[in-house]
Image (cartoon, rainbow, N blue to C red):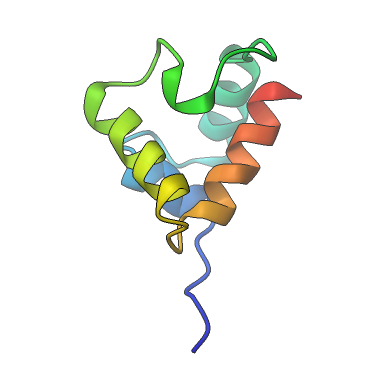
Length: 76
């Protein structure tokens, strides 16, 4: 069975963030991470958001792919 596809909009909704294309672009532009900062360890996440990101990646959930994409964008 295929895993559901989650878009950036769905991820931002799950994280409690604004989901407009402009808000997503602004978030990515304003929250760039240094290469040595893990996505879940970024200072701008709440404890709940960081836990969701960690769980998504460690459990290789159906969110993992879009979380990886966000990671790449913030480290880019």
